[in-house]
Length: 176
Image 1 (tube, rainbow, N blue to C red):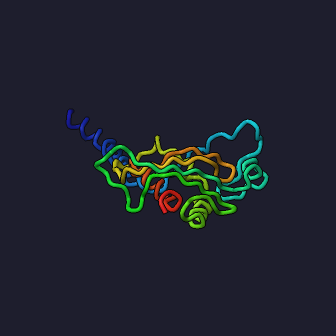
Image 2: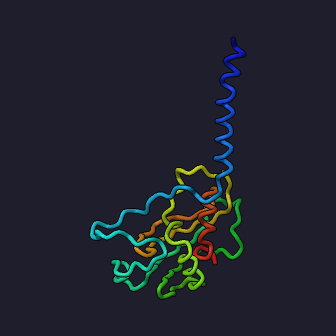
Image 3: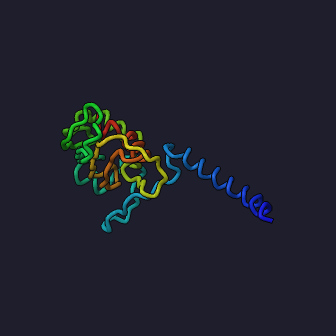
């Protein structure tokens, strides 16, 4: 009778292992689910424009004239065993798009990258995602401001596979 029980349980265990294998294999690919952006302020009843659009008439655009306005604070984690990517230096930049400007070393390229990917990398929450356990480096970048009508206040790092992918999606913005 013990053999029957083991034989009956084997297919369900194999199915569970196969599902786990698929989850691990899928890690590193584009996430299937994206958390919604942070809620807008109570002053505006309008829906935020889609990522990558100009958001004409939005409060952010009319207040400061730029479609994208970001402050990019670059630092290093305390892990001295890791070395940063070549050319990475600590400091603070500003970036505006529409018109391009600020203290960013490559504003045109950074704005083109944001136009391509939209606000998604800036609002993506990877905390509930299954990610590979790898460390890509000590780079830490805190970004605040807005992309179109989406408010941004996020940290980019290289602490796991999902965060590394997210960092690389806007590499030109964070480390040109």
